[in-house]
Length: 380
Image 1 (cartoon, rainbow, N blue to C red):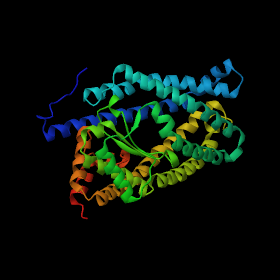
Image 2 (cartoon, rainbow, N blue to C red):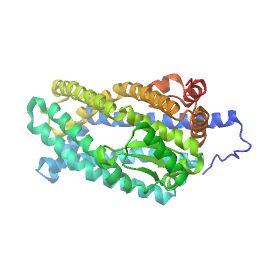
Image 3 (cartoon, helix red, strand yellow):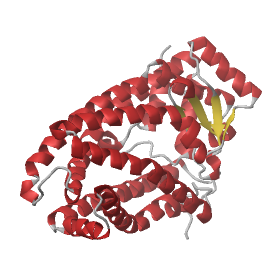
Image 4 (cartoon, helix red, strand yellow):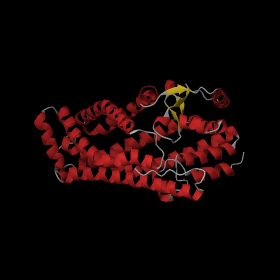
């Protein structure tokens, strides 16, 4: 495997930018290819009658609708997984090693994938059964009932993710460096923020990239900092990254995002439900809960998600600007803010100046070049 490892002492800024753009462009192509394949599979299932054939196979093994649903989705899932495996493996393992961004062994890669797969089954199977039960027993208002269940589940997931799900993949420990911990606790005290903990996690077991996040709800609310961030950034840089995450909390961004997401979800379920019901006959289906018809519903939902993603990204970028402003106003240290952004760009091999259309459609954060310039021009 060819690996693009370049001595940091010799690499020029132009060369780094070239590599970052090439890396980013490759990721975008792989992601778009995956999406095209996903939609192509749904279209083939619907228009060729393959969906009905798979449904017949499922009912050859059982007369129970729920078990048939499980077999139906299992056959499609395995097929989709086999088709996507080369793309997923190249994107998640080969490409990351090629650009010297990964610490993951081949064994570690498949171990993480297996854990994710098992977790997906544990969560996904009950949800799919609940979805099918609602579809079969809630009449014309199935979309509303489904929306309420999805909202309830998202709240539950947000509550347990930091303490139950994320520890399955990473080891979380309280920040132990006294200098860093005191700076961060002082910042919390100054801003009136109460979190249940400030943790670092072993991000370096998989990647050389750095990241931080505000996660959880209620008693599980916490700020997490990757060890790659802790080990490579100065105390002042860590403080400004931390202040950015605190800004998300003080500005209630998670609550606002959830509110908008819920409204968008209910609207999407309503629109797709009406389209689904109106077009069933055209594709030769007879009922909303016909198992063979479900790919049609998934197609409508996926198209709706494709259309609304740029809208969600606009909201996300707006909140990132607000969090950056909060970090600068709170720390009064734009030098550390700028250097932190520059380190993030370098360590994550981020494209600092992405194509404006790509940024608008796909990026949840403003470009790093814009954020760096924002920090330089900031006036207290």
